[in-house]
Image 1 (cartoon, chains in turn cyan, orange, brown):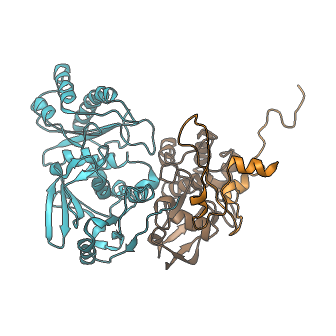
Image 2 (spheres, chains in turn green, brown, yellow; image 1 turned 135 degrees about the vertical axis):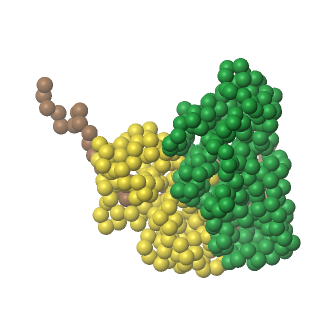
Image 3 (cartoon, one colour; image 1 turned 135 degrees about the horizontal axis):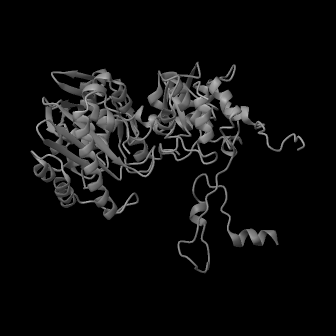
Length: 296
Length: 79
Length: 152
């Protein structure tokens, strides 16, 4: 299937060159990293840029390292890069666990976490993990740089706080100081290319505090602060879990679409929250390796 | 029990080798050269409607269009 | 149009492309490489899989200009001299019926077996989750990959 729309192509070799191009073309420029969203959008006529700026020649965007207790994920780091990185698997297992649920190997080898963030579909798998980690999105333009809290990043379905002319260079993810464990639950119809019908990330932090975030259950991925406040300081027993699932049902706004009905999403969100909480607590107390991958 | 040659045993696929080597040809893999034409079916936008007439003049005037086939014209040609 | 050069199945090739040309179409229509197939055209089915610098990627989601200076391997370039153990086990265990998914499946499994020579069944399933087969129901494909990985 050919792309009908015509555009020019640039492959800047450094950040300044890229930012100058983006300043000149503003909203008419499309950024190309892995291309797994952009090329589909070009084919289906949803993206009609006058120029495609391929950032894969900018080596500084490839960074993926841990410094000062923070994981920094450059704009060119793919989901496969995250899964292969020992530091991510051991110190940020929730990031690896959610990366492993994204599409399939052939997509993960090209698709970047930052690209996923910029597409900002409500069902994005990396969203809940970044939200419970209080990640920061680092953006630059010819006018300077700024950091955007992940909590202010998603402003609607496929809409973010990124302005025309701005480029995301990296995402930084602080590691909580207290002992903690987490888990990502993804509800999908089948393995492989399916998007999440619902996604919930849970982090249990030593001292009975819990961080919870969801995707595909509202116009944008977000933290479930009301649920968190109910769980704060609590030992998880039947009564508390019942209160928490009831709170979640009030906090989310699922829709009916081709993947699931709103009622189904609402029901399963409660089931996933309960299982996710139990699993995160189990992992917190069970020292040793955490199994990655999908949970039953 | 008599011994059968084929019944009850697996037979290796004759074209198995081509298929695992990427050499098997499917219809879309055949080359017809530069004179291959492409056709597109245009349907009535209204279900269960009567076709009173087809004005293909605009389509026929477009660059690269070789011919427009309609049911009336083709059946007239055959008779 | 600009000329791009890349290594295709071990051989340097130069081809003139427009920015909007998709790698899959350039391989099939201009370079005569027919093993990558057009399926869903949006990255879901895996029939257009190629190895890009050794890693499986969807050629329907890559602009041809992106691969300048890179290395592309298609099924034509795998076992060209002599079939690999994976290809042999695919024949022996009758992994494919119509064979349309075979190029994508074999390239994806080739990447898996290179990184992980003795995968578990779960790892094989995870690796092949993005390659759709509508004939054999996957059982024989998984068996063939497991057999090539040394598991009966």
